[in-house]
Amino acid sequence: MISRLRAQHGSGLHETNIYLGQKYIVADSSLIPELLQVLRDQEQFDYCVDITAVHYPDREKQFEVVWILYSFPHNDRIRVKAAYADGESVPSAVPIWPAANWLEREVYDMFGIRFEGHPDLKRILLPDDWKGHPLRKDYGIIQQDQEWVQINLGIESGQ
Amino acid sequence: MTDRTSHLELERHEKTFLDSNELIINMGPQHPATHGVLRVILKLDGEKVLGTECVIGYLHRGVEKIAEHRTYTMFNPYVDRMDYVAAVSNGLGYCEAVEKLLNVEAPPRANYIRVILTELNRLASHMLWLGTHALDIGAITPLFYTFRDREEILKIFEKYCGARLTTHAFRIGGCSYETYEGFEREVEKFIKFVTPKIGEYEELLTTNRIWVERTKNVGKISAKECIALGVTGPVLRASGVKWDLRKAQPYAAYADFDFDIPVGEHGDTFDRYIVRMQEMRQSLRIIEQAVGKIPTGPIMAKIPKVMKPPVGEIYHSIEAPKGELGYFIVSDGSTQPYRVRVRPPSFVNLQALDMMVRGALVADVIAVIGTLDIVLGEVDR
Image (cartoon, rainbow over the protein chains, first blue to last red):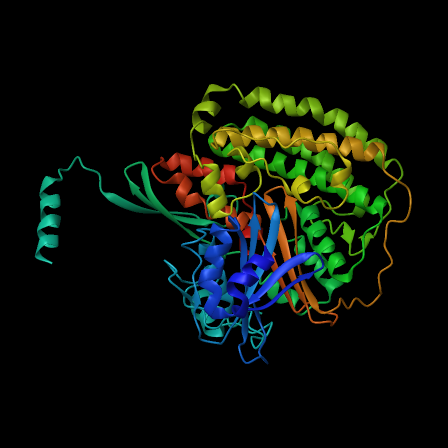
């Protein structure tokens, strides 16, 4: 499968490898919409297990978005990763897998990564008017939106 | 623009006082049938549900953020607080994921203990689900029965590790405690005790007319829709997909045991009930086999005191009572994980609620929330 993908999209795939028995692909962000579609339609990755991100503040493109896919027909998993700069938007996978809806909302909530074409991109776990995105590395562990806490909970601080 | 206005006016004229109006109703977050702090905004036309929106996050504790500031060992107890009615499964998934990252394997005896406790926990989780789900629909008795019997499982946990719910039963590399004197006998006694009890629950419900009418054809979801929405666990199996991670990608010692994957046909609330009941029997089968041939030997693998997994990533998932529970861990080679992502089954399954209740009645929303078997601690993390 990997070799098939390599033949088709050779230049866009930065790395295809297996680590601890798990396949992953690091793809160019421009290739993502096409690659995800191909993975579902041709390689039968019909189940989008998870979408998440990792923040690397030192890199030029700070965010690595990760799609974890599973194929029921082949009992196989694959991880697709692509790097995005802060402020850059990621193509939404909702048209491909409806499951992506809440998963993408959570990534937006926690990292502030916008998904282009998402039907209803808004915060999911934190209140709508919360400031900041907690899973970014520059967000301190005891940091919080003090203003929100004071207005909505009527306490000085949530700590 | 003019067309649109006239259309609306036409509609207004045609409506009489007998026509129902659309109504927005707020359910929760404090509502006894939401199984925690779940808020659902319902758009209704009379009794009919036109659409829903879930508002979640009331129990958000930032578990994934906490993980980045703890060592691998220190984070271990935190995972128990996600799905707090199946804490053992959470711990198993996390420990196995870190073990894979460290390239160590738990010894066989530890794996057997893990299987026994995890399956006991699956039983406890399903019992709690049955009791509360039946209570929501109006059958009060099963709650007393299931809580009485679940207590026996919690007693075994308490004797094993001192805790009843947030057990923290496993350590990275194996188990921290050897089984107590008479553990196997006690588990066998429990199997004998509980097997007829499951029949008792079924006697109360399976042919009960009220139960059948409240659950049959309610909250239907097809296999295709399940897969598209990422729904896993008993919900997926009740729609006819024979898929269980314990068989598809065996972990711990599951490859050693004989058990079936119960599947449903119609994907309705009744089938999900039947599937979970059968799953309880299968769990007992697994426990019986595991107790019968539990190997002797060490319970901990050799792991370094200071854990520094090599740089890399791992995604490991297990079949939790609610569905696929996955951990995606990124290591930067230090003592603390660079990123821990939990793929919670409850969160993803809850997404299907809207699709399942559209066109149904308000009372069915309660049935569907119950049948999805969500735990808000896991939804919100």
